[in-house]
Every structure is written in C-alpha cells, then in structure tokens.
Image 1 (spheres, rainbow, N blue to C red):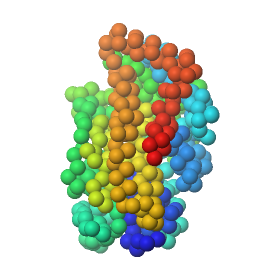
Image 2 (tube, protein in one colour):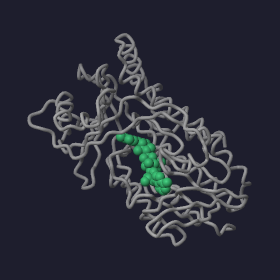
Image 3 (tube, protein in one colour):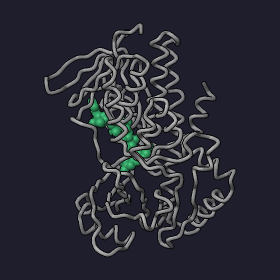
Length: 404
Ligand SMILES: Cc1cc2nc3c(=O)[nH]c(=O)nc-3n(C[C@H](O)[C@H](O)[C@H](O)COP(=O)(O)OP(=O)(O)OC[C@H]3O[C@@H](n4cnc5c(N)ncnc54)[C@H](O)[C@@H]3O)c2cc1C
C-alpha cells in the first residue's frame, strides 16, 4: 500500500465501523474514533434489506446477522381503525433478483459490535472509544484531526477522513456544509415491549397502520437474548412535551388504544426521536467524505436510513481502495458525491416522505385513493416486484452500477 498514513474515521456507529472493516479487509490502515465509551444500543435501525445483506455477505458478516436477527419476507400495510390489511408485500417475489429475498430484523448495535469484533482481527485497524473528534485541518497531502480523550488532546494525521459521526456531525459542521431539508414538528415515540404480539401478528412481523389521527408501526426484533421483543412506533402530538409522551399512564394508554389487552404492557424501553428529512449539500470536500447520518437523515418508515449509510460506506471504501492502490486517480473520488447524493434523494428521501404522508393522510378521498393504489400494486405481480425492488434499495444499487 503506497500510503503509510491511515484512513481516519470519525464515529464508531454502524456506518463508521462498516467503512473501517471494508477498508481493513483491503489491507488499508484505518483508525476509528468514537466519542462514547461503547456502541449505542438504544432501539434504532433493525430492518436490513436485500441489497445491504448482499454487501454484508461480501464483508463476511451476513451469516451472523441472520443468526442474530429474524428473517421476515413480508410486510403489511393496515387500516388501523378498520383493523384490515390494505396490502401485503412479499420480498419472496424477488427470488430471481437477490440471494436474500427478505429482510433481516437485526438491531444496529449488534451489527456495529460484530464489525468491531472483526476489526480487532486486523493489526492495521483500531477503534478508540471515549475519543471525540473536535476539529480538522486539510493539507495537500493529508488531513489532521484533533481528538479529545481521557489522556487529553492529540493531533492525528491521515490520508483521508470519513465523517460518520451521525446527524449532528462535527465533521460536516467543520467543513461548513449545509444540512438542507426540514425537521418534523412531531417526534417519534418508540416503545419496546416483551408482550408477545406473536399470536395476533404471527403471519407477518413488520406492520404499518395507517390512520388519520394516530398512525403507528409494529415490528418484531430478536432482542439481545434472541427471545423476541416488539417495537411500537407512534408519532407524538406536536404540543406534547417529552414528559407527557414518556409518562407511564400515557404510554399504557397509547398501547391499549392500539391493541387492547388485559393488564399493563411490560415496557422495556421508551425513546423519543426527533425526525428530519435532510441531505448534506455536498458529500465531501477535499480529503474528507461524509457517510451515513452525517450525510443524510430521514424518517424510519421503510427502514432505509442505515441501509443507505452502509451502501455509502461500502462505495466509499471501494473508491478509496482503488485510489490508495494507485488503480484510479484521486479525482475519481468525486464520483462519491456525484452519485450518492442524488441517489439518496431519489430512493431514500422520496420513499420515506411518501411512506409517512400515506400513513398520516387525513383527507378521506385521498386515503381511499392511496389504499386502492396499494391494493392494485400488491395484486399485480409486475407492479408488486417493481415496488419491492425500490423498497429494498436493489434499484438504487443497480442504477449506481449502470452509471459506473
Ligand atoms: C427509531 C428509529 C428506527 C430506525 N430504523 C431504521 C431501520 O429499520 N433501517 C434503517 O436502515 N435505518 C433505520 N433508522 C436510521 C438509523 O438508525 C441511522 O441511519 C443509523 O444510526 C446511522 O448510522 P451512523 O453510523 O451513520 O450514525 P450513528 O448511529 O448516529 O453513529 C454515529 C456515531 O458517531 C459518534 N460521534 C458523534 N460525534 C462524534 C465525534 N465528534 N467524534 C467521534 N465520534 C462521534 C456517536 O457517538 C455515534 O456512535 C432508524 C432510526 C430511528 C431513530
């Protein structure tokens, strides 16, 4: 490898450590700096789509992801008030398109920890926890970052820097790159319960419930012990405070209105998330590139944000590998911004915005029209497959490959 300086990665979330693993496997020295003491295990991404499973297979992670997650080929869209399935979609229809015609529900902290475990096997890779990147400076031949850790402040030089430090990214702000888009006035409340919805939802563990007053979503994840947990996601009311939304009586009321049952729900986690639709004005500048939530954020309806972030990590690592091995000129890295930014807008922003709009639609005629369109799509094998190719990000990967 012509470079002796490592690639630096700010952020040891799933995107940062997948980028690091993809680089380390090419023999490229890499150093990850993570501000926190450990991987964040709050309930966030779980849905891993086919296109991402194929990439994780290349990285040698897919068997463990499947073993520690749950395979689910279907998802359903319901009318909440009528308790009727509007449409059922089945990734099984993509059997000729992918080796993985399903999603795997595997929590993101498991994936990040798996990648970190693999990184430990490479002498040229390191992950420093409790180490925050605070500033950066670029030169013709390198990028320097200042990191703050338990032993004080250090300056570290690298050949390139991957900003994977999440939505509030220090790296993106240091570059002065705008985060264009908007933040929803409501927040999303995620309640995780050990109550087994399995009897009612045995046929499908990914469910979206459309409703003009309070839509919601219900998913099963395997949980750390593999025994299964269900997550129920609701929007908060705009005027509701954090305390009101998280209050035990309010939480139980929301769950009981959704699915009345005898006795209180055992709630093992309750979390509130701000919800944004934002894309960085550029995915890089000079020797610094943005990946994952640092570059784009979106609502979780469709389970696309982390999936696309992993695709960023894999593409960026491939491009950097070619440049560092002298197989491609440095300017070929421009492709990263040129292709990934529009792909994010077309596949992630557009789909997640449409998914939310459809679930919350208040106009009765528009709701009926949406429901009819969903039923027609699900009933027509050609339209059904086309819908799933887009929903699983296979289309975005194919579009990128065609442009190469
Ligand atoms: C409720 C919910 C459900 C979701 N469901 C899905 C889903 O099913 N599928 C999907 O694809 N996506 C989903 N998402 C989105 C997904 O969680 C994010 O896209 C994902 O976490 C992005 O990973 P990341 O590594 O880019 O950023 P993060 O996970 O935010 O990681 C960034 C890391 O950088 C560290 N950091 C921050 N600043 C610094 C610094 N200055 N120096 C060093 N380290 C720093 C942080 O501590 C953190 O560990 C969901 C999100 C939410 C909120």
